[in-house]
Image (cartoon, rainbow, N blue to C red; front, side, top):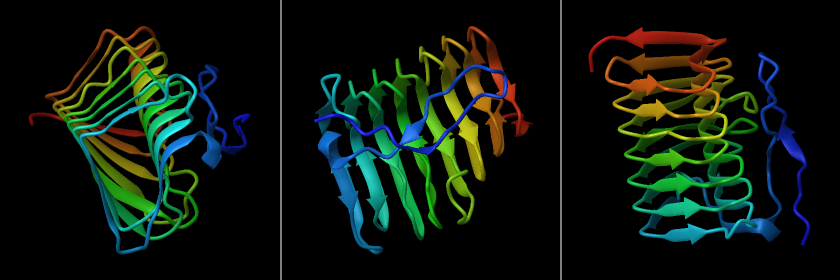
Length: 221
């Protein structure tokens, strides 16, 4: 079945480098779709989810109280490995000890819509060989600003950027690496990002850190 490419929101770089359109996929090309109740807690543990180059999203979280992904591998999807896009309420999430690699658009996409928001952590995650390793986007939501803490993560060797922030988001990065990406290590198109002195953001082709929003360098750990 043909894949749907109807964009939810078009995102483009202010430097002229085209970024992909983030789209909500049709169910025909999803592996795991989560449409749960507002108080439901969802756990995914020890899964190897492989799109074989054709599946659109490995995991798409549309609704629920919380999501925990632990010790999983999500790879080879034509769009996104793990997508969290609640449309109402505040979703709590954690992604831990997980590999998201070789996906066509993003490894992890955190992008609430409608009145939704999300708060959570990305810990000990490898996001490599995607177009962008980790995307935190708040432009599609009118809810409370999304807050994400990325720690002990590696976002290396992606085609465009290691970590990207845009819209009404607050992102903190600590004890993480963003290296060998084809354009940027950390791309801040808008939003507020805190990067700590214990990060290793270097060796990226265009620029290690691009800032068009608010970036605060925090010394120490």
